[in-house]
Length: 390
Length: 102
Image (tube, rainbow over all chains, first blue to last red; front, side, top):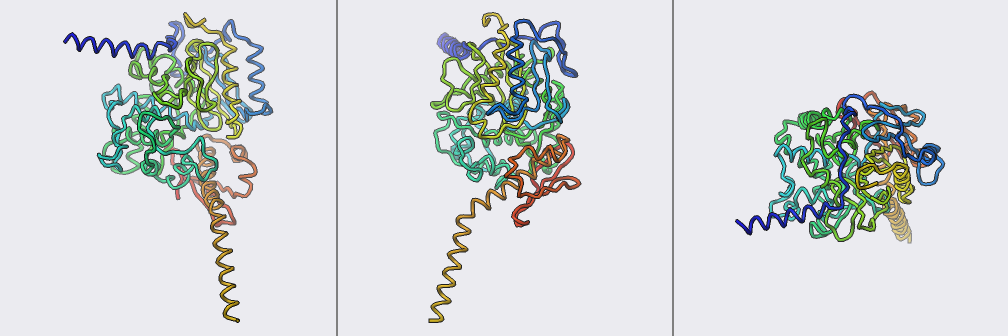
């Protein structure tokens, strides 16, 4: 009994030290209403470098700054209030734009909700109907898929041509009618849990496993998607007042890794759910510790900038291997949902800040890292406000 | 002699056809992917985002979309390329967005 409590204390100590570097998530100010129906608005807070912020916004919307591409919607939230929003000509506050891979962060939230409901244990094998029990892939736990350390042979970020990219193939090529079927066919090339690789297919398979948990025996693809969409709305979207359009393939699976359409204000609500540690208006939406899981880099030998469904900026790491790290200042506590062509929902706990940027930045510009630097530039115009991070 | 000429002719044709298939396979695959991509994304742009077609066209590299014919249907989008040899269709379903239909 004594040794059991010693082991428990040791495990608890390890968990605490793993999270020791995380900046505390600020609670919603008592006098600020939750934005379930409408965003409360407010003036730009004191301490903001307004000239630097205005210059950054001008660069983003002028379409001329190298590497930034075309910015279409920007929303900035500080202290739970909308302090700035800006739209390019032809774009409006209620226009739903594509998330691309920001959807991965939403899938991480949906898995968290299933965990809270007792439907999923992320430390058990996730599995797939196409894999035999003896298949090594069938033994990989949900946690490993969400951390993208599954070891699957999947090519996206490093693909040199569209034709060799698994991302293109799964959505628009061989997998276009049944994306999970395509993804389940990819082999392992690394020992699971050791090597990070950006794997959209892993999140598709996670979405598929989650859908099979929520809708175990659908009568048809139509019934499958209708039941899943209803569950998503009841447990996440309606709770936080988000009105997105998730898209579904012909097999009735929501894409999971991409293709959720929403406006910038709604993506900011999703960011606020994470900034507030999974709480919303007095209700716990995500399990305790779920946001810390999202913003803690997974164990891998080759990368330190990906948590679980979210990109991170760890203080102790160099930010390898891709130019996705957002430098928001000395705290380096930003975590972000990021999508193809420059979609961002950035959450900065030390500044009680959320910045959403939607737009069209071609791939060759994204690879320069200019847009990630711009996100950091915007964040650095805001002061740290969380106690201990000023 | 005449039979030998036929044989050389057949070999030349086979080499040309084989070469075209070999070196054109990426072009064909890319054209196929491109038509599906543009059909699906334009469908979402029109029916989910509610943007006009001119705005949707700005989501693509102008040079890449130029050879494509993009047609808005009642509940979707059809895209064709290479004089109709390659085409793709995306379908919109209210509440569920767009997806490739073929």
